[in-house]
Image 1: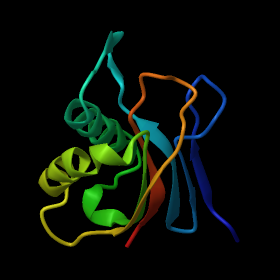
Image 2: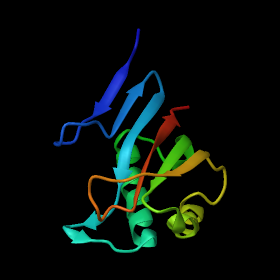
Image 3: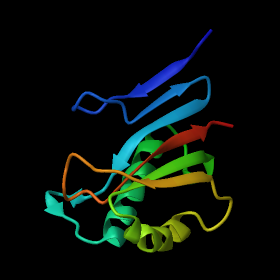
Length: 120
């Protein structure tokens, strides 16, 4: 029998869906804090990971449970800035990662992530 857990924010999408121990992580960004826009890729990356941490903690998981994380950047020139923050959040046991560029609906957004975690 399939067991399913869904975290639904008020804007009509799920931040994560868990099915039989596999957690599909919906997009997470971090371009604002309390209505204040964050300007640099480092600020936005750190806040994105903080938001992801909050989501994972709601279902009893942590960064060590992430097995795949896809990074979307507005500009590939931000790769090194993003990666410097990535290294702080993932000091070892790195998840598989893909990084690519895209346009975002919000022009101020520089980064979004989505991926998969696994409940051991």
